[in-house]
Length: 384
Image (cartoon, rainbow, N blue to C red; front, side, top):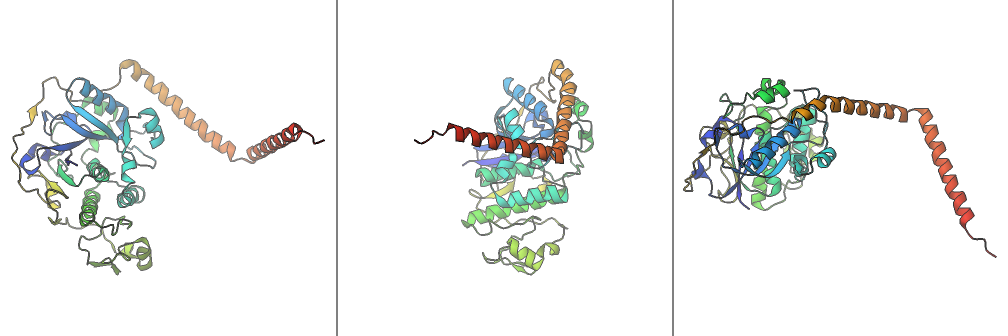
């Protein structure tokens, strides 16, 4: 399998050192990557990840980009968790689940279905989201999905861990701001994400690759919801020895020793050790200026590369494309009708919970069973 470049939209996206990567690699992009004024990672994209809150508009934009020949996109992923998705930026956004996603947009793949293939990632993301109220960013979603797909040589750029540098391009989109006014206010300080959670996600992903490199299944069934397990397999933490398969941070030992209580939030950024063979396993930074270098090793310069980002044409798409005016005019009506149907569904649930409904159902079921029995008796031929 090829190497993969995980590209966020941070300032370090403009500072990729391609001599640190092989000539052939896949590219994962995220959200409004097309705002860039240069093809920082090229035109060919293996996978695009985007937020479900703007799924319809984003898909329309991406399809238009392909029709214009600006990008070649192979796969679409929606960063959707199998839990109620609450969108704080716009209260009118409807909840989306995986079943609805497949029915409405069958070509869009759900990130969760890849996340759940690796139990450790599944526990960590859902615990963080549902219990701590924060979840890893789209950059971490790309890394987790890449690992789930089998990539072992991963390069990272544009994931700057909420550094002061901001984005690699102008993010003040008029259409995006008009559709979701709260988006720009939370672009740099989103309460749903945190640097700490992303650091733990990187640590967890690196630990997973370390175990895979060893060719061992040791600890794959372990639960590390806080992403705090040390890389040192001989370390003792919270009274739990994790230097053997039987006690490798499993759920029983967690509850027996109350080890969860011993974990504290990450106070300092750990320096991950360069312990992987560069050509086979590892998660590496390829941007010298990226703050992610605090916790990821910078890939060594091993290749000769002549790649230079191509400047995009002046008429390139650099904003979110909204549906046509006719469709937009009906959006409010469709939304109100859908909300009414949801309220009707709630009323139906209330009716179903009532005593009269139970009596009605019981009577109906009994009558139907009695009818079936009589029909069977009457249809049975009499023996002579």
